[in-house]
Length: 318
Image 1 (cartoon, rainbow, N blue to C red):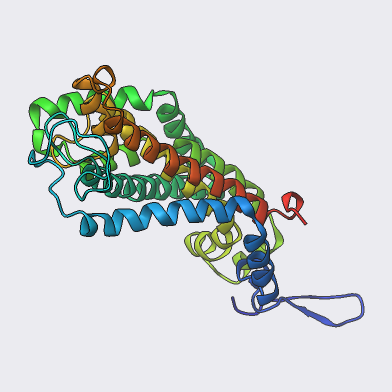
Image 2 (image 1 turned 30 degrees about the horizontal axis):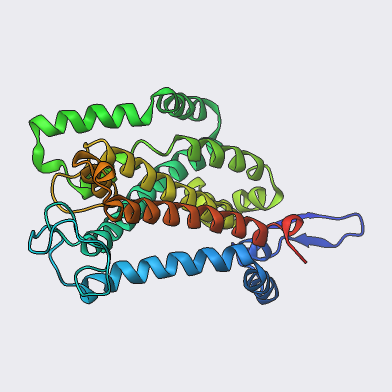
């Protein structure tokens, strides 16, 4: 931001706006960064969540290297319980498929859906929330109306209709990629409302007025002034949308409206239920994917709580 000359004070001295009024907020000092790092290392919730997510990510990356079996190949023993033998670490299905190979490939699909679906929802929600909150007036009313329309539409019901339609008219679209997109474009409304409210409270601050006086346009003010001051809030929003995308995708997979090819944790549970794994006592078929979804989403929400305590001085444990 360039210097802005303001009127002289009562003593005749010229008052000049600082070169970067928001540097103290938008770009935290080394002291504040060290403070955040200090409390992050002291937060048991945050460290636990990072450890769980880190383990699952490493398992998703290196699992297929450890166990190179095709997750859909029917080449092993039928309904074999878990053992230490290669290929039987998580047992096998009714069709002789490697459950561990399915699990690690399902983890990959889970994280992909979370990243893409949560990322799309975050991008849409942040864009609408920032514009509505900063512009106000008829722009805010129009975007708020669109947000309310999406809020009252049951997301899962809408996705059920879309998936059922694609199953008949466009089977090729029944994949993880398109599923992630559909989840992302329907999961953003609550984020837009929350970011809109935060932007409303920031647009009347002094540093925004100084940015306007310096000649900055609305988009630059949103990107370089408002967004940096909400960086921690935006990070927490993305984490929640990440977990929400995983849950929605798993729900679609579990009722048979997920991908028709490949493997996911929800699809594993759908196959286990379809072939009576519970009645047959093959618990190793449906327990690992259920625990995988619970551990991933649970760790994300614990991380969210931990980060909230780290960024909010009132919630920190001294």
